[in-house]
Length: 331
Length: 291
Image 1 (cartoon, rainbow over the protein chains, first blue to last red):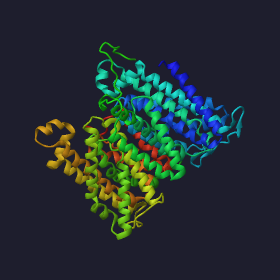
Image 2: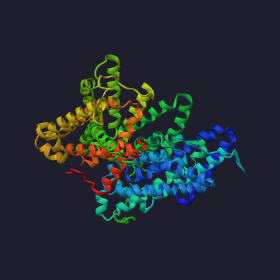
Image 3: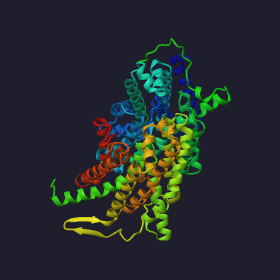
Image 4: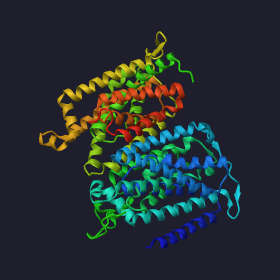
């Protein structure tokens, strides 16, 4: 399917989802759906670097919170429409992603992972000490009750997140099928061999960290309006980090479908478990699912489908059948 | 700002004391990450587990926390050996350690933390021992015994580990496995067995480090997260797998953190280790005493 066609199909599906939520008539569905869609964006963003390039980012919460806090800082200065804040959050997180990548990606992959973990702690320290955005006490954001054609404000936020999810998925699919995506795959499979064949690995990795970071920041920007009261401990919560890793790995990392499946499944499961059991127990479930899946089903749900439905061995999942004379130097 | 000499000396001394404790905390990571190339980011979570076990034994039986932690080291060793076996069979053997292995340890970190929260809640826990409370006053220098005792035992631990790694057959085998696994195989030594033992030792140190931690400060499950950045910063700065390097780096980080806390406020000290990490990665990735 061509990408513009894919985008149109996605938009239609998105429209149907929005219409269905409207038809249900209960704003709870918008509150719950917003969280699930937010995880779709986060896990798609994580997968662009983690799944396509094979570099693990533990600092999703940091990039996410960076977007949220850029929104708070700008809101204090002068309230802007949320789509503009989303763009600004994306730019800020993208720049930080680029800087992190530049410092650590020349070394072995593990250093990048560790540095992202530490980045979360340091950004949290900075925010806690920054009184302008509320410091450790947190910041209140008064959101308007209603917005013109949609009715309640949460519907507006839901719509923004829905569009972000559609945009994110389209971008991920586009990357996957472009020369860029082939380049990413060579890094994931054998970085040394890729470098030796003339793939500009550092440049590609920097592109991936920037796109991935920017998308996470965009997902975070509407958060202050959603929860109304933003605290460092909630914006930098470990559940964002663990979910954005667990969802793609459970769904399958090699294509854009995996993060979508993982986020919708795990996100809805958690929404149900939070209401019926408790939020600590549902995080424990996520942890066990993550460990279980990486040990037993290394290619996630997609891998299981390939194995049992299409009878394809594990090693071939996500590998492309590229003929020998394919373009050798993706940039 | 007035730089008083007393304050400066006190800050440096408490930095040295805390730094030695950081060395004990990092020793396990220096073995697993530095020597074995196993990126065990769950190490701080095992340290917190050690703290809670020392707390339970101390509260139930009234045993000294350090003694208690020494008694449970075999259990931690077994835990470490078991985890390495799973890690090897599921990831290292299949060549998937980079992405899924990291996610595996991240999951372990998360499970340990959430389980502790579910079982003990998020209240701060502390232990009882005769050396918690009194402080030696040497002139204008104050040395709290609750930091001095873990510091001395930490130095002992580092010395013992260094002796084992450099002077015994097992230690030399561990160092060898880091250099060339194939060569070890040709010498009729099973490299996987050596790595399993080494990883077991690295987790066993977490039991001791956990006891030190809960002696120095009250502990709740998420305290471990502060140590992730610190531990890896020290490990990288020390030169990955060199225990003397780890000790020097730990002392350096301890001193700078203590100075930052004294002169700028304690809420800034978590940023110190990250600064060190980035600076090391940018300027000298091989660390202080790198191979």
